[in-house]
Length: 155
View: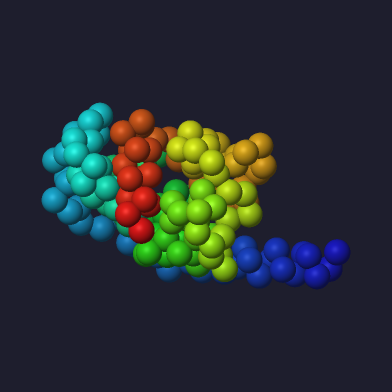
């Protein structure tokens, strides 16, 4: 029991340091997708570009921070790494999430569909299993969800 508490404390301490150290990056300048409408993503390329922006900055197409119902929010890259291969959080490249590729940082609960991914990101549940408490629950539009998925599929 003491070892579990110590490990939990260390994990929370690392997360707190990461959040404090990276919080100034969540308002990074926008890329060329700034004027893209959030309700439609256009081509797969523009969807992936918007997804990269959301992943890297935690901001919607208009530059506003993505709202969350739980957790600190911010960019996905803060915990999952700039290339989504995992840091504090697991490797969330699409091929790893769906189990078609392996990774030493694979998530505890693989996902089998885009709908499961959206549920995981918005509710903290993956296939009926609770994700770690530090995972924010984002409020995403369908276009934002599709854009993030399109981006993760490029990695």
